Length: 164
Image (cartoon, rainbow, N blue to C red; front, top):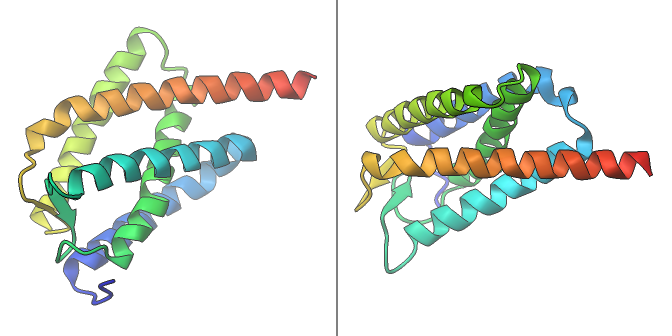
């Protein structure tokens, strides 16, 4: 495991720290069960997709300096994605962005995600070896829809349990 720190590792750490700071004030909006399940869901989803695309035979991209797994990449997977997803769900639920508003919200987050991915590429935190930014265009909305569906399922089930 590579633990040398140059700019791309610092980029991951700074990004993760910022999203943790944004998550910290809203963490109590959700029940601990919802936070834990969304956290686990995110790690499982992102890890599965990333490792599938990073592994042989695809090798579409990698994080950091080299194709080996880096500690900063692990921290990114463990904290950045789950916190960003919970921030996404917080805004969605708190401001009741349902119906047609959901489509605009998902499009906005897709634009933001594409921009952030582009910044990751420019900072050499994400290295494409076959992937292209435009491939991510359908991935982000699909992931957002799946996350919202999962959130509604978990929220409904946690309410059912609390009424029993």
